[in-house]
Image (cartoon, rainbow, N blue to C red; front, top):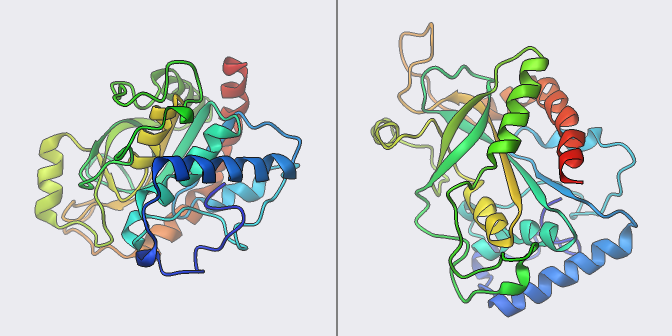
Length: 283
């Protein structure tokens, strides 16, 4: 699920939009949640945000209730000019309609040279270098999805759930592949990173780099949602020489999408097996 259920992100230029106050944001998110409740009798417990090249997973959902996102699926990004209140709006709505777990996925560059193209990596932590934070502004405690959440200052020491990560690693092993764990570093984008930046990110402890996910995770943790993050390594990051290569390759967005398509079967198999397991431990 992504974006506004009643609107089309193309109806106005993103740079012309204004940041909503937290009160307005809560009202809009609650209205969206009410709209969704009116469209289905289902009460979702797990929300999934699909990253670049991974969106086709939604087509594998059986018995789905489809709510038009102006005939699109996906997320909007800050690099498109959207304020963070809109970037994280789907996460807010997911929490309000009953989700207690959020699975965030993305396409990422491999800072860690041991990652092979097409590898799936469970996110163990993140570094936010986007220069901003989705929780900026007045606090709105009504966004709390569980008791004790919705606080002005909230803990991020286990932003990505250790128990869900362990579950994912175990399931991957059952399916015959290794799910590594790594730290995801987020930049604003939209340009890919320079080799010097990647060297700096590696020094900071990053294994992956991308342009999404951290703000959804911040908002999810503010609400009290448990988060599982999975990155698809679509390419070695700038300046990183892949195994078997002599030089680093130029990065192209089309290659990112193609790797997502090639990895779809493995990604779909992992998520399909994980979702009932997560639902069982949360019931």
